[in-house]
Image 1 (tube, rainbow, N blue to C red):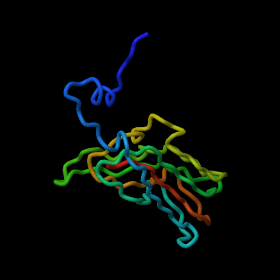
Image 2: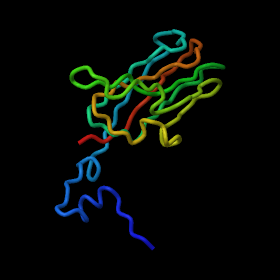
Image 3: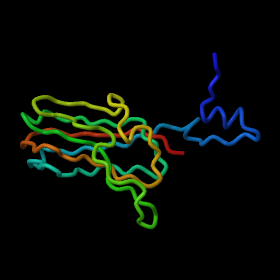
Image 4: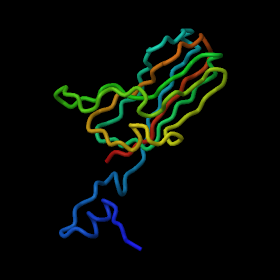
Length: 160
C-alpha cells in the first residue's frame, strides 16, 4: 500500500521548508450570490441567445456549486448558466466566455427545473479558481414562451 500526498498536504507536511496553503483551500468561508429574473413583470418572450446577467463573483473565487431554478416554460425553454469573458485589470482576456461553465442544458420545457453543477461535475466552472472578476449569466438556447414566474440562479463560492 502506498501513501500518496495531496498537493496541500505536501506543502504543509512534506516540503522543507513548508509552504503556506491558501486560506480558501483550507479554512475558507463559503459565500453565496443569488439572482432572480421575474418573467411576470416583464411579460416577454426570451429569444435564443438572450442573456440574463447575474451577480459578479470577485477575483479569486472558486465556485463549489451553482444552480438554476426555473418555472415551466410550456414546451420550450432551455438555458445554460455560465460567464462572460473574464478580464484582468488591463482588459486582457484571462478566460474566454463560457456559456455553460456551471450548468448545461437546464430544460424547463414542460416542467419546472432545478439543476446544479454538482449534478454535472466536470463542467469547466466546477472548482475553478478565477483570476479576475466573473460576470455570471444565463444564456437562452431555446426560445421561451411568455410565462409567469421567477428564473432564479445562484452560486456558492470560496474566496479568501
